[in-house]
Image (cartoon, rainbow, N blue to C red; front, top):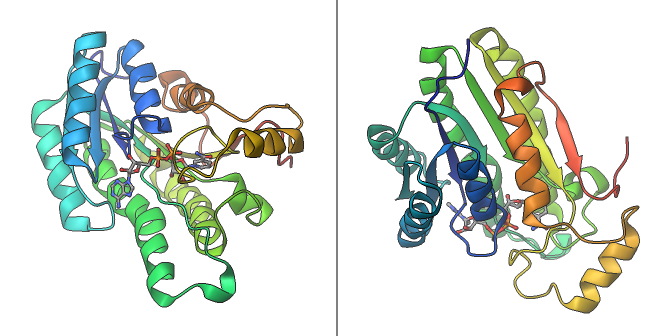
Length: 254
Ligand code: NAD
C-alpha cells in the first residue's frame, strides 16, 4: 500500500530540549511529516509541537503520558489521532538511563527501567499498530542502544542493557507477525549521542574519551539518529524489516 500524501509520525520521548526526539521531530517535519509527540512532560510536548508547526508549517500536536502506563499511552494516542492525519509511523524514543552497578540494583530500580524502556515500547507499539493495520501500511522504529549489544560500557548498566536488548527481540517478533499487514518494524542502536540523558556526566573530557573508543573519532549528534529514523520510516524502506541499524561510529560491528 502506498503512503498517503498527508501522514503522521508519532514520537514518544520527544520533548527534552537537547534530546534525539525533538531533533528528529524537526528533521521529519522538514521532510513533510505531521508530528505527534507523547512525553511524560505534557507541557513540553505541546510546546515542541507548537514550535514545529510554526517553523515547518505541518500539523503537530503534543500529549502527556507516562509510557509505562498503558491507559495513559492509549489516551494520548486517541487524543493525537483525533487531530492529526493518518498515523503511518511510530518512533519509540522515551527512555531513562540507569547507571546503578548490578550488585546494587533494587527490585524497584529493575522494574522502573524495564517498565519505561521495554513495556513502554510494547504499549505504544501495540496501540499504534492497531491503527496501522486498518490502512495496511505502517512503520515502527524503536531506540535500542550499543549497550544492549556490547554489555553496557557506556553509561547505563544492566537493567538498561536488558531492556534495550529486549527491544530487539520484541521488534523482530512483531515484524514477523505484522509483515503481511504492510507494517515494518525496525530498531536503531545508537552509540553515545550528545544529549542530556547521562544527567550532566557527559563532560568534554568524557566525550573525548568515548570518541577515542570508536572507529569514527567523535560522539554522535541527535541529527545522526534523526537521519536513520527518516530512512527507516520512509516509503522507500518498505523492504527492510526486523533489522537493527547500528548508528554508533563503528563501536559495534557484526
Ligand atoms: P533524553 O533524556 O534527552 O530524552 C528522553 C525523553 O524521554 C525525554 O523527553 C523524557 O521526558 C522522556 N521520558 C522519560 N521517561 C518517560 C516516560 N516514563 N514516559 C514518557 N516519556 C518519558 O534522552 P535521549 O538521549 O534523547 O534518548 C532518546 C532515546 O535514545 C532513549 O530511548 C535512549 O535510551 C536512547 N539512546 C540514547 C543514547 C545517548 O547516548 N543519548 C544512546 C543510545 C540510546
